[in-house]
Length: 103
Image (tube, rainbow, N blue to C red):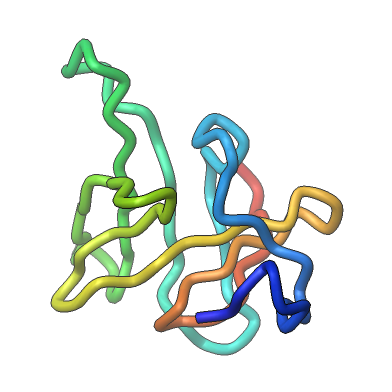
């Protein structure tokens, strides 16, 4: 993980962002699984989920959580999320950069 205070953040990503900004479908150009971020309509507390599509018909859903200002999901290990709003790039610590796909 990088530190915003030391200037070692090459992508210009931020840990603090609104989850509404990252809802939608995301694709990796590096071969990582496609993801979708969505707001649960079944829960009243504005719970957001990240859905991973590893194969056709094989989906994994994980709630997006926050701990000490860091957004993360737990899919067989913790993956932190960061987002660059200027370039619309979502960064997952385990899978790399994602670019917005068609909805």
